[in-house]
Image 1 (cartoon, one colour):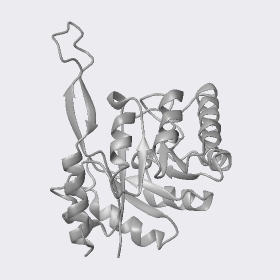
Image 2: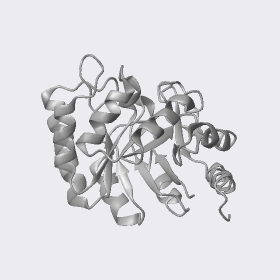
Image 3: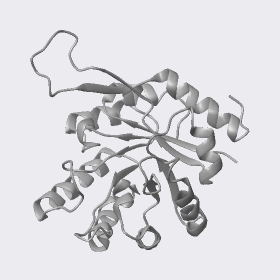
Image 4: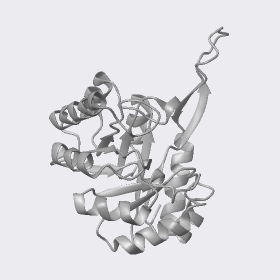
Length: 244
């Protein structure tokens, strides 16, 4: 049995570096501070020019919840059109209703607008009140995979629900475990969750400024930790019985 490893990159350099390793795809994001937003137009262009493996840009106009205004949703549809024009393999996105359920009408519009690109439903899924019902909606709409932590703070904590989703999906869609995934727990997670699709940042944090700065709110930057990525691949190869 093989596996898929998706790496989430928050800058172009990290995405390019990750693409040199044997991974399935990259989720390309901006806005690390708010958990990911749509990358800039220039970043999308350059990623398409310089990365050969599949790239799934996140389509998310802002941080916060996933209940969007008409204007925000129109922005999302235009960004999806742009990703299609640039030739990306897919997108990562999601929308919800006020009650937390998946917005079925808008997700249908997204899947239709994205075609022939694939669609991953990101962790908006972890905010849904009925995960099994949400999964069935997404299967019906043709979404190809769900990114989930099993509705817990980390995928390892949510491994029981992830296993239940894998079993309930029965091959109709991929259940991708994500959140808190490191090389130290990836084998245990694979064993407990029953999935073979994983999402990790493999990141390290570096200071936003190399020199002293009065601008304190900028925090740190998240960049790819190539040593951690190598360890993730080694641990997954070992778990799934593949050569390093």
